[in-house]
Image (tube, rainbow, N blue to C red):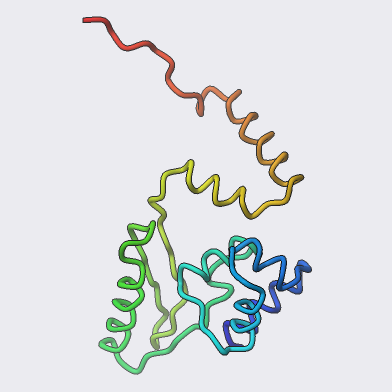
Length: 155
């Protein structure tokens, strides 16, 4: 199954229209249609945004690759890592099974939490944003998550 087919299946399973997904990603519905039909391939950054908008994992949308040699795998792994340079990530880990099949792509974010929260909020409707605000307010009541409010020492 192609990445476009996986995007379409994930979108239809929730259900969501191409226009709704496009709005969440700040792209046109034509972009979504082109991804789903295999006319355009989304960048890894876009795949991550699509996965977030659809509530699925990135690896659910990726096509797994197989490699005939370790050198081919290393080359592809480096291409994936290079595609994330300058993005809001610091680490991309690719795990593979014997035989070369990629089994997991792991991305560690370094975007400031407030930016990640705002990006996630942009993917929610009004009801979802209200629910998210309630969850954040709940976290402020838990001592483990409270900011240190100790005033700095006077000199």
